Amino acid sequence: MAALVALGLVLALPSAVLASHSWGNYHWARQVTEFNLKTGDNVTSTWDAYLDDAIVDWSESNVLNLIEVAGSAKGRNCRPPAGRVEVCNNTYGNNGWLGIAQIWVQGSHITQGSVRNNDTYFNQAQYNSPAWREFVMCQEIGHTLGLGHTDEDFENANDGSCMDYTNDPDGGAGGGSSSDPANTDPNAHDYAQLSSIYQHLDSTTTVGAATPNGSAAWHSEFGREVARSTGAAASASLFVRDFGAGLRVISLVIWA
Image (cartoon, rainbow, N blue to C red; front, side):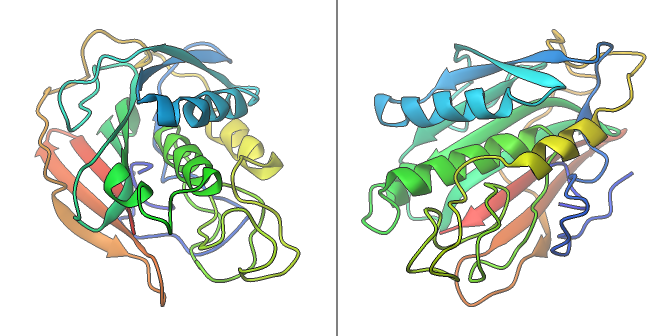
């Protein structure tokens, strides 16, 4: 996303440009060149392997390591403590969304992040596959690190990144190309983008912080929809909930 919290802010979904797919200028503040980010495991056994894989994949970046820890999300809506990311799954109902990534930001700094996967849809035949679970888990965690999408066309050929929208996450026959790669893992461009996002150090840190930099206000409602991708099939929306004083919760929703 060129404008989000990951989900300064240009509140619009970015165009499909591979040169840059940072999510605005949002990033975790840190004072070391390679930082460790705690990632809380609140998922059931069905999702454990996909969370483990995503953590290993994103930790191949040369600027961050995701450290899997016991989950401490608050309630069904997966509210995270400050300074870390929480990952959850639940049967959230027939509400239209497949996955949600949320980040809390103070100015341009991410203070906490949350990922939710909706089993109401993942239990249905269309999405009940390893490729769909890998794709959504990988992408939503990528958003909490400050990455946007490489492409927002669900029906074209895959570019081999989980940050690329697709209706055919395992690639090959059945999608935009009979020979395109799977979109289930990060690729070299994703790692390069993370290196670009985190090329500078900050004077403070939000990683592992005991309290957020600002109000702890939170709400399960998304707030105001400010952008929506277009297309014949699945789509995504960007929502912003503004609490003032530079504190926002930004939500990126993948619609089923």
